[in-house]
Image (cartoon, rainbow, N blue to C red):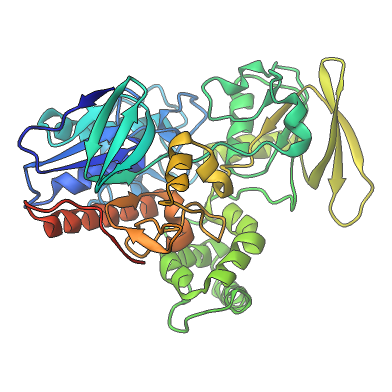
Length: 482
């Protein structure tokens, strides 16, 4: 295998595996600060032609929009209106639906991808960041360094590795496994043109009621779909829309640290009642929870975090992750017209009939099972974070080497307070970092873009600290007690 040799004068090489939003943001903040050592090479490994787009912001479907107003999305927390100003400086004549009913801009997701790509480009142009356009297929320890093998047959030797890999694909429900190769069973809607197989009059079953489900409905409606749509989830909860403009976060969940999920829930319910008495909506309380989320999560012991993830996460997700007004309008119109109905149920059985499927749903509250015939099934249950280490050969290899283990919360990879993964022996590997949502089992609220940005900056600073500690004559990688 050929080696991708680092810059000749470099004393350290930092490899960022994954060049989506998280990896691009981390790399940019790593090299952008004053005093960053110029003899350090930063290489971002990403097969896409542009850095910063990743899975989410490579979307070309015009129905897919950012889920929050442009003013709340930025690469730079100290320049909160950076993306909004970017949107204001580009032609939007072809986007008649840019402005939501709240009067705020919700650009297409592809526009945010363009913005991130534009902001990182100067660092590529001057060589502070290098883009190795390949897919990392292997990361292995070589003494105190790492060898990263690319799908193009070359390899890179690095001193520090940051794993900023994408979300794992959804887990296909067991009863759907026999049909996994069917064109009308769409197991992963993030695949380009995934729903092209759905015809205009098809009866569609959507597994899941969250953000992705709403996106699918909006996409189908834009394509002129007229067939019946049935979506379901265990609790039947749908993603909600945004609250009144200008409403401030309300609630204090830190002055009295909560170490019990039940006591935290009691406090949330109490705060919701107080907010209502003051004429505020639930959005203000959820926004306060989000802002304080990392510290709230840090106060909970692992067993309580697991309870939150298991019992409260579905409720949290539909309130925390809100849909853009344009998408909300498409879903509400489909429901109001009778084209779409939403169920609280689980999938009991699926059999083949003619060119479609006969599906049996098991409703909640012990109601009789319900059977319906559909032509297409779309799975929108979200990333299978619990099985992340089995989703990529590279991660399996690191787990087998004892460097990675799943988080006991079921939310990604177990990391310490510096975002270093905790090995099977209980030690932290100081030269390996996990950036982005796969670290949320430790850091809590780490799915929304503001929190992902903050975490990318946090990891960038930890990497800089490590570079400073290494010195010219030292190699990194010693294990420390975690």
